[in-house]
Image (tube, rainbow over all chains, first blue to last red; front, top):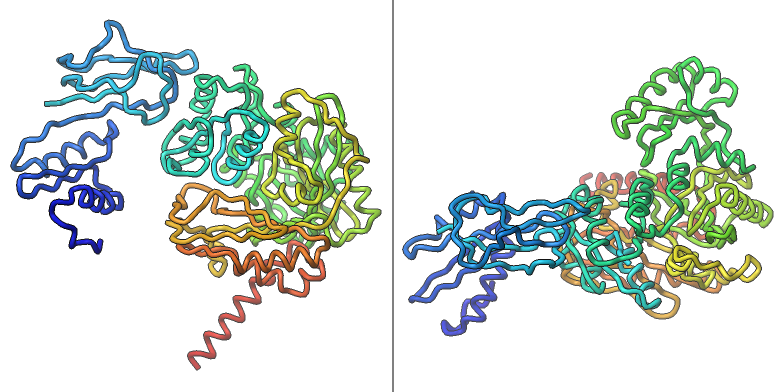
Length: 142
Length: 456
C-alpha cells in the first residue's frame, strides 16, 4: 500500500485501502478506530467458524463493546421456506430453534438457530431459490 | 439450460446457448465466485466450496439447481459429470435432458473391456488382447499367445492407473498383482485384462455426430500424439498429418460402423492407436472433447450447438457428402504448469494476460488480467487454435500467436509449445506419443550440460 498520504478526511479511500489489505488475509473481521471514527469490515462468517469469529470479535472488542452478529447460511441448494410459526425480525430465541428449511429434491433440510439470540434480520423471502452459502438470517447473539 | 462445468468449456457452452437464444444457468464453487462463466450466464448458483467433490461433483446440489431454476437440460462439458452414467440417469429421473448419449451407452463405453468387446462385435479393429483375466495362469497363457511385450490394464482404469507394461514372462506375476491391487485401491474394481503393447503409436481419434434417429456422420480425425509423459495431450491437429488416404477412409468407416452398432447419439470421439497404417480401437469418449475446436475450424461446424440440437430431438439434417474438410487447424493447450519441472501445476494470480488475435486465430479461455487460478482444478487456462489453408500456414500462424501471448504470474506451456513446433519432427508431421517425452529428456540433458559448463 503506497497511498499513505491519503487525506485523513477521505474515508472512502481509506476503506478501499483497508479492504485491499484485508482480502489478502485469512481474517474474518478487521476494525480500525481513530479519532472517534470506526471502520469495520468483515467476511460473513460460516456457522462452523463461530469460535473463530468470537475470537476475532473478542480481540477487536476493546474499548467499545461490539454486538456479536452471526449469519446463518444455506448449506445446500433449494427453496427457502420459513418454518411455522414464521419467525419475524426482532424475535428473541431462548435456545436452538428451527427457523426455516431448505427444500431440495423433495426433502426438508432444517435451518436451525444453533443457540439463543435475537433475529436481527431475515435475508430471504419465503419461496426464494437459495444457493450454497446464501445468507439467510442475521442473529444477534448479544 | 444448466451448464455443469467451469472454466473455458463453461464459456464455450454459454456462447453456443446465447447464439441459439437459450437461457443459461451457471454453477460455481466458492473458489470460482469471480469467474467469467458466472458473470456471462443468465443466472448463477453456488453449489459448494472449492474442492470438486463438494461442488462440481455434488450431484444433489446440481440437480436441485436445475429444478429450482426450471432448467430442462444439463450440458456436462468434459470431465466432472460428462461420462457419469449414474448422473445421466438421475437427470432422466427428474425429467431433465442430459446432453450426451443414453446412460447405458455411457456405461458400456466407460468400461474399457466391455467397450472393446462391443467394438469387436461391430467389426472394428482392436488391439490383440483378452477379456477379463481371472488368474495369473490365464494371463501367462494369453501373453504367450499375444507375444511380449504386453500391457495389463484395469477395466475401470484411467490416467495410467492400474496399468503395467510387461516386457518378459518373469515379470508377469508381479505386474498382474500390481495392476490389480492398484485398480482395486483407486477404482474399487481390481479386474484387469491384457493387450498387446504397441510401442510408440500415434494417437488418432475420430469425431462423430449421431442423432436419435440413427443418422451418423464423422467429422474427420485429429492427431493428438503430442502428449506429456503423463499421457495428457498438449498439441492436437486436424487432419492427421501422416496417414494414408486408404487408412484414413478405413478409420472413418470404422467409426461410423461402431456408432451404428452401439446406437450412439450425440457427439462422441473414438480413440485409436495407429502403428503405421494399422489402426486399433482404444476407447470411446462419450462427450465433447477439449480439442473439439480444431475439428470445428476445418469443418465449419459448431459441435456444441449440434449437441444441443441433437439432444432436443432434432435430426442431423445433413449427410456425410455435405461435409467437406477445408484447410488445417492446430491447437496448443496453455496450462498453468512448469514444463521444466514435470509440468507441475501452479496456482495463483495472473498479474498480466494478453491473448493473440488476427486472422485465423481462435482463443478459448476463461482467464483475464487479475484472474485467480485456484489450486483445485485442471491447470488448463487457455486453448489457442490456429487455422491455415495448409499445415505449414497453420504452424506459422500458431508460432506468431504464441509469441503475441503474454501470461504473467504463473509458468505456462507456451515456451514448450514453441520448442515443439520448431522441431524437424513436428514440422514433418513425423511424431508419435514417444516424441514429447524424448524431447523433454533431451532438453533436461542440455540444461544439465549448460549448468555444468557454467560451474566448470
